[in-house]
Every structure is written in structure tokens, then in C-alpha cells.
Image (cartoon, rainbow, N blue to C red; front, top):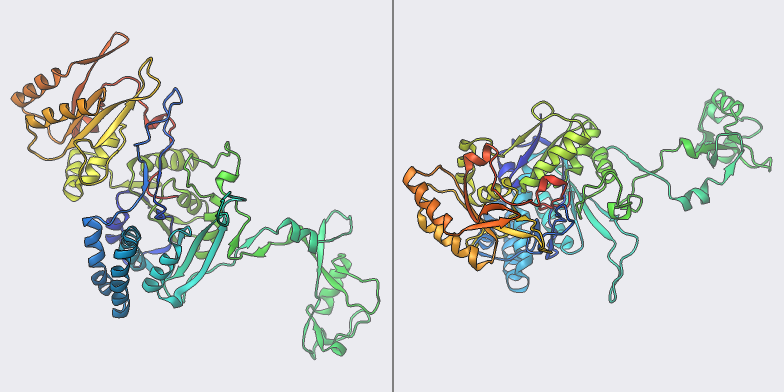
Length: 545
């Protein structure tokens, strides 16, 4: 069954069977050192504050990344990559640590994830990695090392924009897509792209005005003499005298001529030609420069395909890739699936699919808008969602496996936004935004998540300090387990001391607490009109999708 996973693709791919995937397309973060803020808006049309990072493409060589960098030679050897590649990585690592540590952090992140991709590909499988020129030349070296230079197939240039103003260098208008195969026995289906209008005007210049439209003329003969019927004269033309033969048998030539499919030049000495009509042509074989697939930004803003993602890729681009490198019934994986263009393209082409995304809201939005509304698929029948806690046991399991992603999941479950990176969060794991009358900007509730068993009264006192320090309107605490009677009473007194937020005659406690079980039952913090994600706002996960 098709599957949509919530979580880090690294952990999920490590649990997938080896040789189980036919095609991988990935559109990962590019190391462009940019923050892509989601275009969240409430009913008033006011955007959320800039600190909300729905997608962060910034990299630092912190302790966690440094450990991954040092472990990389070991991982390469364990994956069966040659010792010379591991040694090259070690030398490269030392050089980049001094010259470009951010790039080193990015490359280590990518190598960690591309290694298991190689393992789960079938021998006939292929990988397409979508990137931009920021780090593409480094990624190419990395892919050569992991897949082998002999398995490099194409560097595809996609012209995503007509023009881009740049004062001091050439305008950047393209992305790069690297195409690698697992072995030299890979699936390949010839695909075609539409003729360029200039090409049509140049070559399809004939028209008999018989309703068949424009055509060009092609050879009716082939090189070399033949002794059979194809080497005999036809309609006064002796092809053997010219060292050639007819490409069709004489009776087929007669049929073509009777059907007005043969072009007769005015000069009787000139050879007849075959009429090739534009409306019957497949197009030209797909080339490695794609200029005929516009980005969504080049289309109308009302174009129905757009889900509002700044880096969303057009469906036609993914359909072309999937058609070329897989067959119906094959399995397609997108480990950074974002808005799931890959999943829709795969489904429409009769492929099975697996999507992974690290943002719970991307998973929810994909399931609702892309899979259920657009494709009319039914969860549990046509696809499964994996990795999202559905009960308290699942939430505990997520806490044990990855505390950061548990915090992230909990914040997003209450319509909040994760605002901090791993490490020092200053007592804030997220924020929930809402509108207040007479305030031009959205107001916020700071959110803290505690998944451990021991949650003392000091947590509430510290959170109240954060509430005052951040000048927020409200503060919310999420805990794993229900509090005991005495503990709940102590918490209630401490929270009540923070007072209420009075809005239009309605009192909202400034400090509130929810348990995970209450959240799973549908309870939410009591706030004014929330800038909720379910109201049609968009989200940008760690991908372009």
C-alpha cells in the first residue's frame, strides 16, 4: 500500500528493505542559507511574525553535525564504498572545516541520507537529485563517490525562470537535476517533449490545406543496396543506382502514395519524400535542457496546481522523470516530499509511492488537499500515514525515539509553530498566534513541551517568567501524563496568579496546561481567534516538493 511517513527520512529509510524501491526523486534543502517563511495568514490577511520558520535552509557545524562528519568515513566503508573514497572524504572534510564549515555541515547531512538511498534502490533503480548551483558541484562529487562515476547518467538543466535581474553576474534562471542509476541495468523509457514554436516554423513548413495540417518531409530510402523488392525501381526512381534502398516495400509505397502521404518534388529527378505530420509527431526525444516546463511561479497565481509552496515543482516535471525511469506498478520514493507533487505524479502514472516529510503539517496538508481532495484517495484503503502518534503509547514511543520531534509534533498538534532549533530554546518550544481587536499585529501564546515523567512546579514558575520576558499574551504547557490531584492544584494556583486575558467580555486564562492524551482527544488551548493551519494557510517543510 502507498505510504506517507512523518519523520526524518534517515531513520525511516534505515528501516526499509534493501532493494525495495525503483525510483527516488529528492528535492532537498540547497544550502542556500535562506529562511523560507510560510505564508501563514489569519482571516484578517495579516502574516505571522518573521521568526516563524516553517522551512529553514541554514546550516552550522554544531556538535551534532561535527559528530556526523567524523563518523562519515566509517559509514562509507560500512556501505561498501571503497577505502579511497573514505580517505578522500577525510581529506575533504579537513579542508572544508577550515574554509567552509557550513558547506561541510550540509554535505554531511546529505551523505548520511544518500547512503541508505543507494541501499534501498533495486539494481534496476535510479535516483534524481534536484538542487541549484549553490552546492551542485559539491553534490556531484558526493554522488560520484557513492554511486560510482560510471553510474552517472545525466545532468539535467531545468530553466525555471525566464529572467532574473542580477547587477553583477549572469541571471540565475535554472536548477540542476542529477540522474544516477544503481547499476548499468537500469529502467529507461524514451520520453518526448513538445516541439519549440521556432522549430515548428523552421521544419514543419508544408501544408496541403487538406485538413491534415503542417508537415515536414523525411527520407523514403535507407543507405546501402538491397537485392530484394526494396532495391527495385519504383515510379521511375532507381534507388540502387544511388547506392540506396527503399525504406518500405513497393506495395506499402503504393499505399502511402494513394493516401497522399508522399511528397513529390517539382523536379522529376528529385527523390520523393515521406510526409511527416505535426499532429502525428511525438515531439523530440527529451533533452537534458528542459525549457518547456514552466515553474509554477511562471504560471498564473490562480493556477489550480499551486498549493502555495514557494519551492513547489510543476507536476509535468515529475511526470517526465517518473515516465522515463520507472514502469507502471513500480515504487517511487520521495524522501523530502513536501507538498507531494511526486506522489501525485506517481499515482497518476500508475506507480506505487512512498512519501516522507519531517513536518507534521506538511503530512496533514498533503493527506487532505493532495491525496483526499485532489486524487480522491481514502486513508486506510488507498494509503497509510505512518509515524504520527495516534494514542498515548505512540506519543511515548516518539518521545523515546526522538525528543525533539516529539516536542515538534506536540506544538504542531495544537496549531502552534515551532520557533526554535535543537539545543537552547530559552523555555520556548513553539508559539501559537491569534488575533486581538485593535492590535495591528498577531499576538502569541508561548508553548513549552515536557515529555518526561517528572514535571515539577518550577516548570510552571519558569514558564511564567518566559511569559513576562517575551511580552507574550499567553503561555501554554504540554505534558505527557495527567497530573496528580495535589500537583494539579499547585499548578492551578500558580497559573491562576498570571491572571486572565480579557477580550470583548471573554476571559482567557493567560497560563494553561494540556496533557498529550487531552490533545489526542481533540482538546486545544483556549485562545481568541487562532491563525490556524487548517484555515487554508500553507506550510513549507524541509524540501521543495
